Image (cartoon, rainbow over all chains, first blue to last red; front, side, top):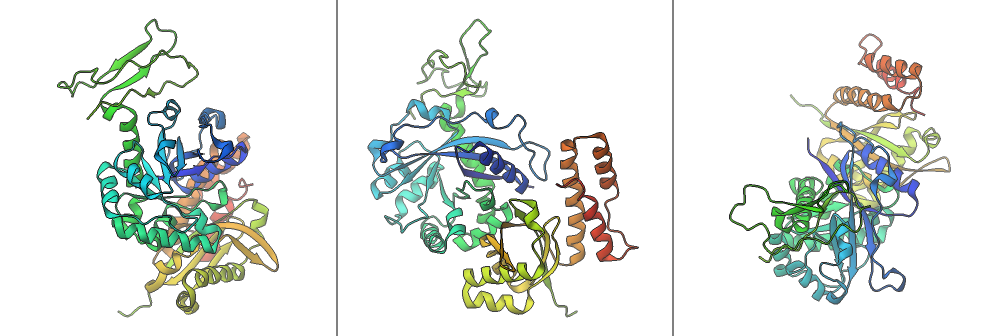
Length: 293
Length: 169
């Protein structure tokens, strides 16, 4: 029994619809979903990076996943649609609030930069139009080695026949270069009726050009490795993480390093994070500066 | 032994409003699937779908449907099912999505799965029950779920599906 994840559920301002979406996802069998907030630096009215909504504002009690006894996990994710590397500020403070970071590159230069250098987890492939650039083997291979995943979303294909052609064509292009490794398939929709069950999606993966094993992994194990990659990105290679101690205690922050890593000094490259100015933030792992490798 | 092998796909139809589900019937679902396969796979898909495919059972109350495909092309036709967004019946359109629950080699295995699945659904409904009386009814329904051999296949099947129905809406 594997854990299925859908890492791209569009955020809508309509709370009822968002709730419905997450309930449908839990009914279909997804154990984890990620609410996607889109940030487009090019558009005039979308200059501000949105702040993710607290999950507790949506549900008092998260719905239970079909077939399991645990409630669904809801994460938050930011997608940056950019065509230029200057739009993307490394280590911007707002990125801390999100569990996953994704970039949708619209130019060859940015694609190369994102694959080889940038600190993100997911690279989105355009599915609604003809590919603006062709994939080259070198950046794709670099991205796979670094652990990034390429994401294809299928909801455009369900809506419209022309989009279906673009989706299948673009994904075929990608498969040629990456041979089906590190690919995730997700919905990208904000309508509950456009969500599809995990077995249906892994069958769709066959149409996209994935093999049977790869297409099942695209909904389960590759998604999980993306989540782990995001965690290590946020917490200095997974070695050091800080926990915000509850406000009643006398000392401000606590540093914790797991006992396994005795060789590395605990404060290597990590500055103590700023004082907890936002007590409203739930006690989660705060981001420290990544250690220079 | 030479035997005609087929695959039975157990699907659930999700609709936005449960009252719309009652408008569906086998011919509408049949037509919708054929159209989706023809759209996705063209003439080749439509031809593979032509002879072997039937809708074996449809329960409009729960939205459970059994589809039968020939074994050689079931993956092809299955890959077209996610593209179904609307089913039309006598001029009325129902917006829906098809979710595949189980693939089996015979109707009986699908039935066994359906009994287990319905039991699970009743378990999920138990916390949502608003009164003690409803909870008792649901618990009784859970205990009585089984494939009833005496009433005959179709009858026993409808029995345990219907017993879960009281609390559905």
